Length: 99
Image (cartoon, rainbow, N blue to C red; front, side):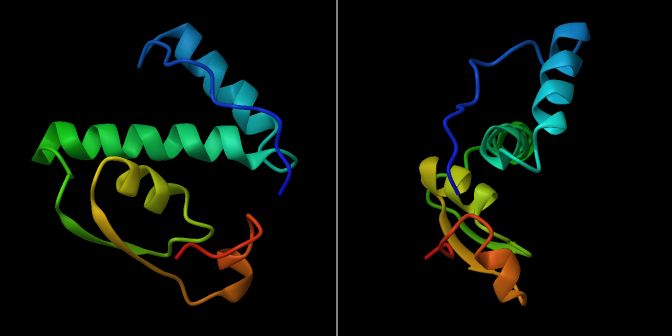
């Protein structure tokens, strides 16, 4: 996958600016999925940590991991992640399957 875009700095978690950011990224999700799914993964891990504490050092199974968006974010925060998906096509959406 070739993506020249990056996720912009965090915007408010609520409000019009947030919805605008999500809509803009979602509209381009098919042609440039990296920014959208990177932001989604960041939000999921933020919410997970807010509810259960830091993921650092935790062992987590990423069921239905696809190309590994959530796996990467979790690992980036120090979790030990086992990515699992039963579709090779999904695993290869970003070019290579997550380790």
